[in-house]
Length: 281
Length: 279
Image 1 (tube, rainbow over the protein chains, first blue to last red):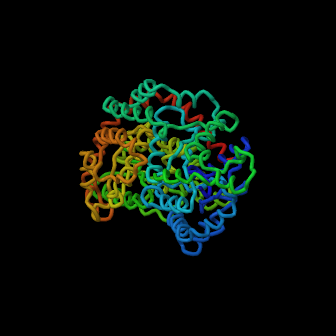
Image 2: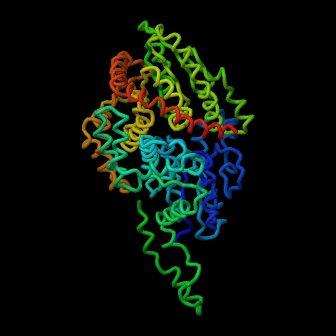
Image 3: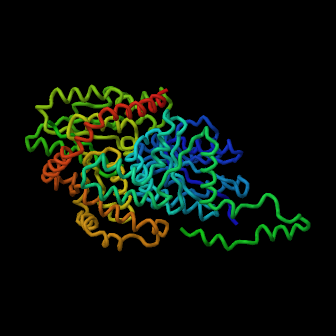
């Protein structure tokens, strides 16, 4: 039985907020946990904030660190005091869905294994996790930029070792609405031709291999998020749910049988624990 | 025509020390450099900068006036500077016969430049006018971990596809750890694969295809080892620069010229995106 479900949101500041708003339009309540000690003052309320534990300002002032050193210090501090986070998370009901808004600095994911360690800790306490890598959709106006985003995502996500989805945010803000469709739904051949036209012939083989990877693997592709478009939000929520196995593990709101006996009903709900062992990534 | 070197690197890779060393090496060899600092948050610029973003944009003031955190402030500073960047290009153009290299130091947080509209605009405006090379500084010591190495290579690949200019990977800190293992891994992918953690099964379905990508990627980029600390390897850089410059002219340049008009449209989109940010 999972303690809760979580989605590690990686991307530019405010990505967690965007996801929460998207959820609200679909009557899905996401709790937001801000884990970015350098985050600016939020216009929206977050349910847990790392800055209640430690903030970049504090560290920079008291310890004379620069912004990078300070950020690393804060994240290490969080891991050392992970009980604080676990206590805060207990406040939520079981099977709450928490968005963990995380700093975007790639160093935390690749060079220093801070984020992977943090993810492990959260998983240890019973959370089923997935990740979303958010990139700004307004910049993706041609296939090569899309490729670039795919690889930045891979670069960041490889060491987290949890299933992830790539999301293109702000798709509602793109003046040419077809642009995103054109880019994300281009056929492999068209993508390849477009790439080949931007690069010298010696890159054609590389382009070919890249297109094969993207074509064959969903986890490399991006899903556009248009906050004005219900279908777009629906797709994303469904993908997140499926990747974190939300439907399999949460408490059913209604039992299939009438609740004649409390004990019987409990057995039904808590019966299947086998699935948890599948969550070894 | 001067060769423009845009120096990128993750925090801790030794990027700034690299730039310092590069500037002094060039000066020792009698090359004329034009140095540009694009890091708005740096406390002290340790090389003689002909252009310094901090002269036009005050990082601390931006943080206060817009109530931004450090990341937001760096991005905003870059945005403001990028909007005026054509003036910088004109300045360089005016002196082009007297400059051998334009050396550009980017912000300490690599995302601020490599993934922002302003970074794109700055790179594009330079690449339209001069032979331009991205220098990607990698921390050799950290790269000994195959996962980190792979992460770095994906990131470098992403930079290549975003900017579409030649890429030179400089493995820094070779005084601490020799980079030949990295060159071996790039030449012989099977060797790398053996070293890669097999515990990570998440990507394993993907990894065969990705390894094919990386294998091909390595054939298309230049790589070298340096120590910004001791100066080792810097004498070999010029050869690499010349090679990359040749690559720039071979086809990147034609593409850039062809797409110049489209780029202006593309810049229109990017401009409005960060104009919104400025509000």
